Length: 215
Picture 1 (cartoon, helix red, strand yellow):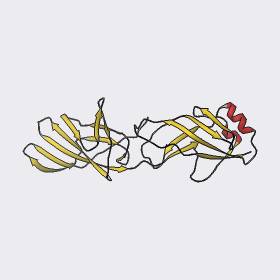
Picture 2 (cartoon, one colour; picture 1 turned 180 degrees about the vertical axis):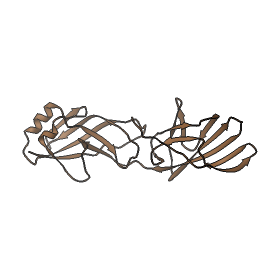
Picture 3 (cartoon, helix red, strand yellow; picture 1 turned 90 degrees about the horizontal axis):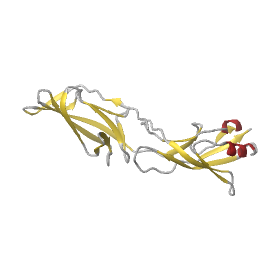
Picture 4 (cartoon, helix red, strand yellow; picture 1 turned 60 degrees about the vertical axis):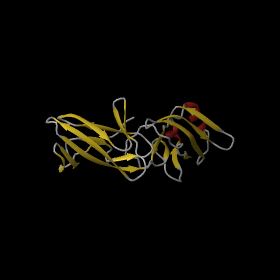
């Protein structure tokens, strides 16, 4: 699983809180790395990275902030945004409190692709040669996090009587030989796409891929 991280840098604005405490709505002391657009997704564990240079210690808190095996995650709930609070103890034992705001988005539908191609409510037209070792993959619509998911199996339905189940993420040689026998403009459906992911959430089945053969 690969995530694209972006380090948040802020201009500092301090407000009096207590004798040895500074409350910072924005600060450049603590760095919280999340997605490029400062977004977290509802229903999954969003990994974050934290760095606080020149500090004795720090604590992070917020609704949906969790720690497991030394790593931090955000699991957002309801609403459109959430606040992560970072309390920093500096070398002189003074404390700075920072607030970092994240937008909360819902995950879009899971779509299937063949050789990185697909479209909504339409048919993918492919030359027969393009189907040899063609790779099946899946992706989330409107998903900023770069998420690589592995297809473990899929099915190809030629008509109401013939359905092939294929292990792995590519059209194998036997299936390709079957496809070569089909006539020009014949249409088939790739469905039942099974995939694994590392976001630790519940996701729907991947959408179907409709393909038309062009000789």
